[in-house]
Length: 149
Image 1 (cartoon, one colour):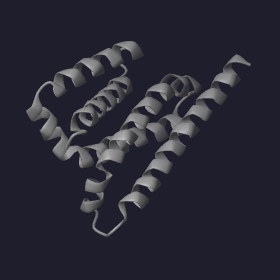
Image 2 (spheres, rainbow, N blue to C red):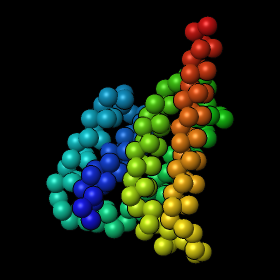
Image 3 (cartoon, rainbow, N blue to C red):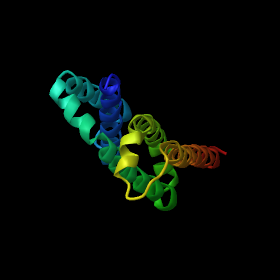
């Protein structure tokens, strides 16, 4: 439980930042400041940290799934501007959630209906998320090169 405080901070920051970016209400810097303020406020209360840490495995998978749907929608149905605007926020959010997933993978594997070794599960999900991040970065760069060139 010694890592619960930074893991909960990262989870709240990543999920709030990603959700605010997907909502499109503010610019990226404002989204980051709001997410930072909310994460700091949340970790200041020990009961919030312990409550969030107890549901973290399921919440992480849920948030990753939401961001994955947004990722595929952006890549396959989005315009060039959508890809350029949303790529950095999605990459940051997916990367931070991957760190959280690495911490809670052993608890998450216990919830699966079949036995899967924790390390194998973590490698599989980690490689998929990193591949999605690289693909999004590549797609964003190729779209940017086409618009400038």
